[in-house]
Image 1 (cartoon, one colour):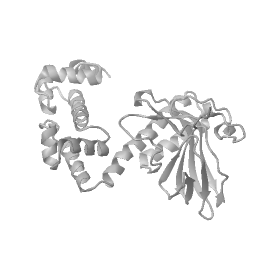
Image 2 (cartoon, one colour; image 1 turned 60 degrees about the horizontal axis):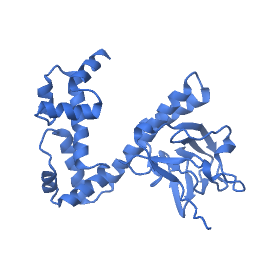
Image 3 (cartoon, one colour; image 1 turned 90 degrees about the horizontal axis):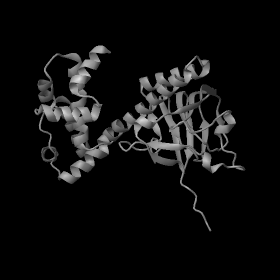
Image 4 (cartoon, one colour; image 1 turned 90 degrees about the vertical axis):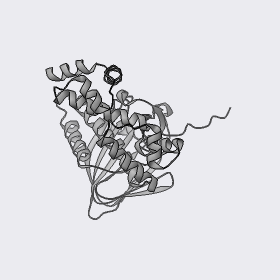
Length: 301
């Protein structure tokens, strides 16, 4: 019986709260102009260009990275790296897996020996339903905060003080979050005229979350059909309009509960829920605690 090879990387829907990345390698690299041998990895790698130029050939596409950019190299996909700058290119290299599933003891354990491929060892790429796979469009412009997290991760991984594994996991989650958020900015910046209208709408929803942002009002505002509006909004924001609105309202409610002594009823009205019972149900379903309980807990903490 012929078995078709499994497409790599293997992707799996995993909610964000279950992501638990493990770090296998984190280091600065200073490299002279060089063509590296082609290879595949069992885990994932982030390569960030501090200065110089990096070229990566992968799946018939060549990506050329300038300082400030990074690439996420997927598990199991053949690629070739070339450093081009004279005298050197300085990189940050981080090897990781999304779910803490690999047992990596040596650097050699991360690279596939093509004469003895262990197919069951390829790490899974975790994907939350609200975002695209990070390796789908693998090149990113790294924010200042993202670079800081990478540098701090290298320090922790190199020095290995007590509890460094916990700190590295947290820093890696920060890095992944920055990359996921940048997907939204990338979709907006590359959006059509209709996409720019969605961007303006999102900003208005942020400013006035209590307004009656029904699907029909949103569609009328954009001058589109309801179905197309929902589809386009999800493409750009990563989530449907109703879910985006609920996230804004919930964030604003938490802020007001923490920072004011206003009655719960007033806060509900200000964020778009004039019915206090409905506000309480929605808030509790999202936060796991009632608005009144959340306020008490925030004062204790």
